[in-house]
Image (cartoon, rainbow, N blue to C red; front, top):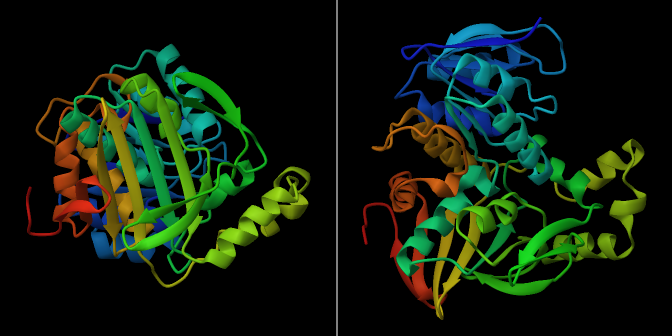
Length: 367
């Protein structure tokens, strides 16, 4: 039998994966505002987060055919949903839904599935980098410039940071070419190509291209003619090892299950905590606006903040009516508010016309 989610405007918010690395952070952020229902495969793993946040627990294993039936006001998905179970259940039940954990091909499929089901409730596909933080910031910069011809994102991955296994599953995609839009034309490129050095705050970081959903959505939503995302590690040696593995063809010949642990070991080395850093450059009509986003609480917390913004959007709790149907994070009616929300939660956002001419938006400061 099918899963059955029923919309209840006074019910809890369902967090699927609500006690994983990102899910627990989102639960802590959301608990002061809404009652929560945390879903996952193992109730025992969620007991500490449930006790801390006052949430209830429910078992929902997306690999198990046992259906879930419950009434909720919204659902946020932070686990891989390969059969679109959460998506379909939310749409059929008229439940506002946001998804934070899809790679580009699955975002494309989710958009297609959702369009065919003709949703009457919000479906926010917010799987862009850091739960949609990157395209939200890009949209805020584009609004200041009056448009966005080029959007270039550079990410510095802190190897000391905490990371859930799902958050690095894109390592399994590094053997697959992907499509980007450059100068208004679509190109198929190899992962980890186009290596370059980028200054991200005070750090000079070597980065290379990766496949992320905002490179697919920004040309559709903002009319961007070039959208690129690059990533590098806080360790130059780790970046060099990753690029060397790419040159040796490891991500192509080592794609089978036999090499899964070896692939993920290149990126999945969760530490006790690190700092999330990224830089976004938006160019339009000969002008450039740059944002450097730094979260000292790390990438899991920054992703959870993206999830909090997504939850506010689908519930209309951000001061604007909730959207109907399929939307992406950069389509928020007031993306500048996203920057203010990030700052209010301790994130520093440096804004400027160039990387060296920046205005710091830190907690307690406004533009």
